[in-house]
Length: 423
Image 1 (spheres, helix red, strand yellow):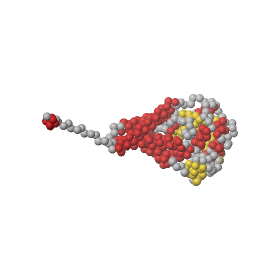
Image 2: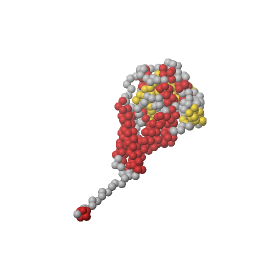
Image 3: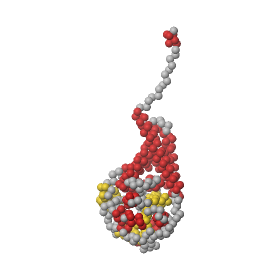
Image 4: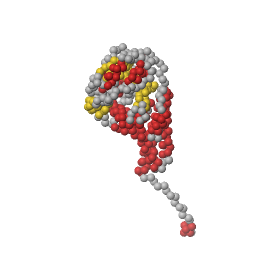
């Protein structure tokens, strides 16, 4: 009976089993998914930060009368000096004095400033600072300019010579100081394409996103931008610029560090994004970005590590997409779509910030920017990361015509001075 039953029972076919992925593939899949997730989070948070910035952005509506002097360190040939002086003359709050500091009488800037000074509606004082030793030439120029102040100003402004300030710029810097809402007021540059070159586009894509990031009131992240910063009379006395800039390469980071240590209140005004013409080629743009990150590596290493980590993770997210696609993952396509949509949305927010401040660019420039910042964002991130990594060991920094050898953040010497480029 058992034998008959055994022979009559039909054997059930075994179901095929899915092959178990090898451990290496599981690890690669996990890493790729983690990188993709990090990239989506980074792009998403960047977009939210931009939207928050845009929602709070208002043009300055309050203006106070004040006595304000401007300190302007200059060097080399200055093709836009006439336009800069015209912009200062058109300020709704006229400057009380403009104090220009140059390295020497041989500096091309010396001749240009002297030729234009007498025709300005405000006094222009020209100071020869002499060659720097143990500090940046710009810092020495600023100290020499500050030594010419007479103590009659309500506020003193430090500015760069390559910005194009709108008519309300000086008032927007000084008013919070006069109202007692801050001790230091600062802004940031807004890279404007002065030439349709690849380097100019890449630098503008990288740099325009920076001021939209949230500011943290901590010692390791406190920053001001020396291209447009105002100090109250009390803050100027407390900071002591001669001591602040005594042994440093970075005027703005040294000032921010000392201000934070002294408990001074720093206000970063969202509307103070100053148009800064940018005509960089690929090589000059890369050198410019590397120098910025060399300064950050020296004086704000925490920010350098943060930037290198974020850009590495986002670049890894782009690299994870083809890896996931090659493994047949269903998440590759939606992951790529998410990265692209978030990147393009952030570009739209950046454009909206510029439009609210009155910045306009040609449609051809916008088309290339959206191509680079969207489908080709991985290339922009690779360019960005290369500048960050090249700044990891800032032993020599080239700034203008001066070469600086750096043994430590406060141990600097001039290793070479190149002739000024011909006009």
